[in-house]
Length: 245
Image (cartoon, rainbow, N blue to C red; front, side, top):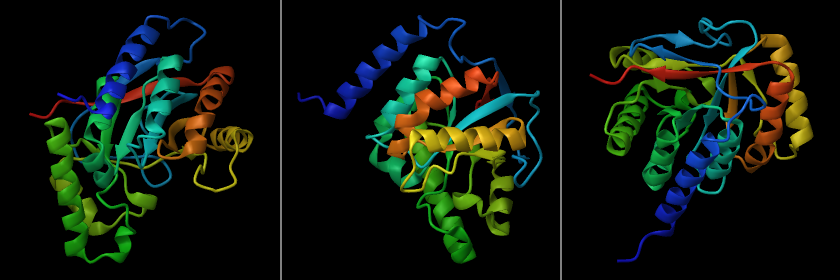
């Protein structure tokens, strides 16, 4: 029987991450603590909602738009080298294409959530189409992880009343942001992203940081971004949710 290359790569990455975890020391950025949230209708991220219960200079690392076979493994590698945990908000279409990689993210100890099915401008869709998009995303998530998604981030952070009501009915937490590196611009470099991260955190003081594991520049810059957090004294908090009943 021929073993798919994607599965071989996932197994190799898993072995590497296990070995890397044993090498974590005080010089690593690390993960200072974890917060386990209830599966409930809650809204976090000061760009649109209330703040998470974080202390000064605590940050939550989050990534959108994956999983990406080209870039997500590099993001996982950088996080493992820094001994840090993150939350990945995945697009349903990408989950459908790359379920093994999505499970690799979760098996590495990171948190997974949804970022819609199609990543369309949901505000331009009819209420029925918005709900259909959510339903498809939820099904693929359940098929991939054998549980319901605990959290959801709106594409472009464009929230809609119909989906806010649907997420509330499904006891799903809405995750907005506190800081961003705006890593979707075509001429970005590592130096530019480092400057944006510094400026954004100077304004927010910490909180939920938005990045994109689907973007090549982010994957390339991430080791430097994580070093910057360490140098500036920020502490990583890992968000988790109670297991589904």
